[in-house]
Image (cartoon, rainbow, N blue to C red; front, top):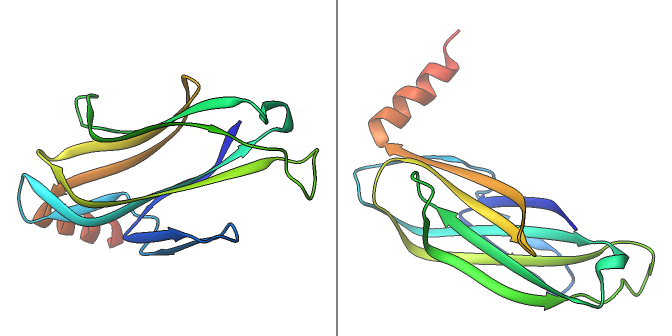
Length: 147
């Protein structure tokens, strides 16, 4: 099993035909007025590829948001799933799409947070999210453009 992609976005939706539509995707740095900071809208999207040998049996998926100290925050999902082999290509990978639309997520302190994708106890992917005071963020962004 492997992660095909995982990303953060302002908003996202998985469609019945296996697509993800997203707005404002691909960020990892955010500047906020002060802390604790509340992000009103944020989405985490992930697509897993499931090898045919891993199909037709139960798996445990865990999505966790870790704070800068490495502790699991209140934002976490744990679920079991079973995937059938791909009907159109039984020797090809099946896939699982998951979109978490998060509202009013509170980040108590500045620092490096991360979403972690864990399947059957194995860590597959980390998606970083760095929060800092807005002025520091703007200064850092201005410094990136300087030559």
